[in-house]
Image (tube, rainbow, N blue to C red):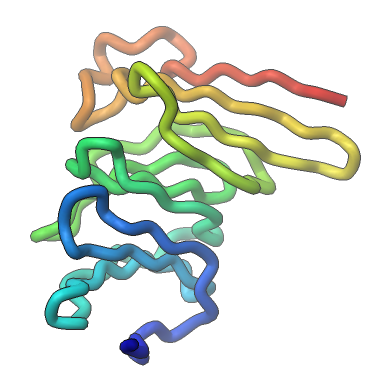
Length: 146
């Protein structure tokens, strides 16, 4: 067992890379840190976000890390850390997200008694596809369930 003590805020989310010994952690300090799980060392940190990072997930192929912030989705690379792309998604209180079939990011948010499901076509964001080829709404669809 190893304790990662370099994180400066409470942990909000964790993600494990699908093929490498790599872990990502999002914390209340509004950053995402990437950790080498063989050497137990921090390898990079994203710049602080404007809002809280609610959820993180590695893409199925491991080429990018997705972060759900209060009003946007960001797609990150590392070594060096860089933001490939971001798209506005007004999900506010993001509760969960996962990558489904055909490069679709599925996410759920909640507000009082309302649950909203979001679908984001990852083929419309870099590095998965070209934003120029994206539909007018950026590939974002919303479905509400009262």
